[in-house]
Length: 170
Image (cartoon, rainbow, N blue to C red):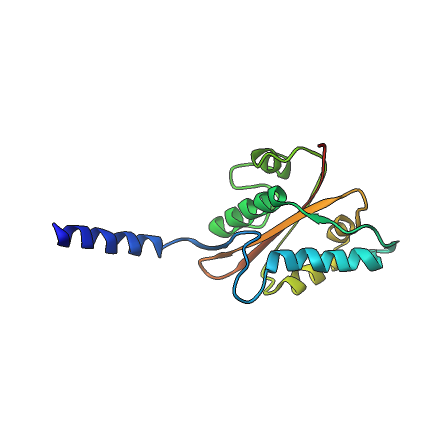
């Protein structure tokens, strides 16, 4: 009997180590740093100074506030991209950002989403988003009031990033 239980426990440990992706839930502090909130700090630093997106200068705007529901939507999408090896605003189940926000209970009047892959650190992700006119405009959009971000690593350790912006209807 003890051998069967022990064997079963070993089998469960083996299965748990065979995951397709390594997840980093938003808001969790890891031993080195809180990477998701580093994204928000970097974004807010840019928002506080103003920047040029494409050929247009955007003046300084108010900082974004961290929102756990937006972070959960970001984590869900990053996880999906990491598990299924794609980069798109459309999820593997056909979901768009609007649907993902509804799934986590976020009632929005305005939303935006930045995604990326392959960036090794938060600074690199934000730097590359600022080079992209559309992503940069999301970062500098004064109508966005909240944000949440997350990343997930694929089994090949490729990192998928999602930053979700929102303005709540509540």
